[in-house]
Length: 273
Length: 124
Picture 1 (cartoon, rainbow over the protein chains, first blue to last red):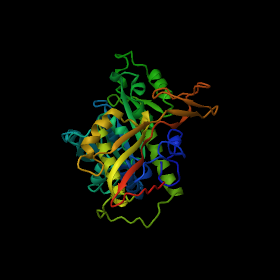
Picture 2 (picture 1 turned 120 degrees about the vertical axis):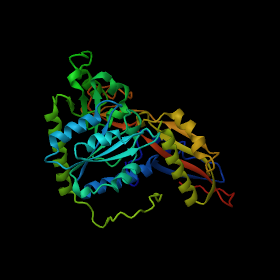
Picture 3 (picture 1 turned 30 degrees about the horizontal axis):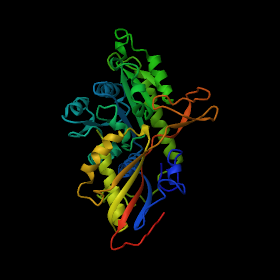
Picture 4 (picture 1 turned 180 degrees about the horizontal axis):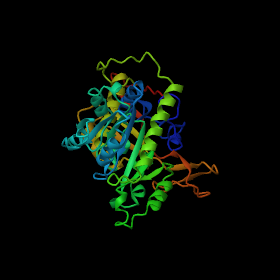
């Protein structure tokens, strides 16, 4: 949503701001100001700024989200092994504590930046912005952002990524899209991970998971994958490759506005309202 | 619990608007919130006194308008009410719908008291 063309006015809120609506009245001596900004206006602004950075270098940014332990890091390790030859990959890792995941990635010779969020349950655009200062984007084709393992909070924060991938691991159960609709609605791809466990945990039905996803009006493709035996890996690689091609084609058709020169001096990002 | 982070972001916006408008006090903050914003209204209310302490909006009323979930069917065009995990068309049952309301998380309006002013000054 933008702040200029009126598209912030939705079916849900238009009755509030129409003449006679609840927001129209005010007591005397007071000033009523209509704002209509997202509560995360500041975050969204920085996210857009991050996205421009990625775009300037034709870098695709993929945000991986899931519960803790759904296999995000294992997926990245397998992806590096499968695609690392032809594709320049960097990883931004988000966890409350430890460098463990970044170290796992670095063992494969890939640049990994660890963000330790302390007690924060999600990454936000400012954290990614800081991480980008330690990453020379001209050296990469793709940046994977591994969000904090959490099916709730990360869904609300735009980081500047181009696409979201939500992992749903087989041990979690196939009804997660119905239980966490906000998260799964944001996904451009849903990956059923640890699918090597399907024969053992046979109460997980991939078709049912897909039905729950359609119930929340998501048309995201669903890929079943095992980072262990690499079943489904081709579909994932094909999807990632497609995303990169689509992004490059998009940027060719819609070149970035020049004039947004960016030797990254630190400006105060406080939005002017 | 990302509600505190969201509330802090709200306070930054509120303070900046109050400052710009030369307000001495913010008396009321109205937020529009849809169920699909992923924000728990009660948690946001709990976070508010913490985030607003010591600001111009310390004593402001926090009004949260809960907005309905509505979808428009991409197939038959009907508009219907929906549930957070059932966004299918109530008319024809198709799942290919577009959300037209229900994911808002928006600062709708503020009511301010101006410095050195008692006369009414209403701006829309």
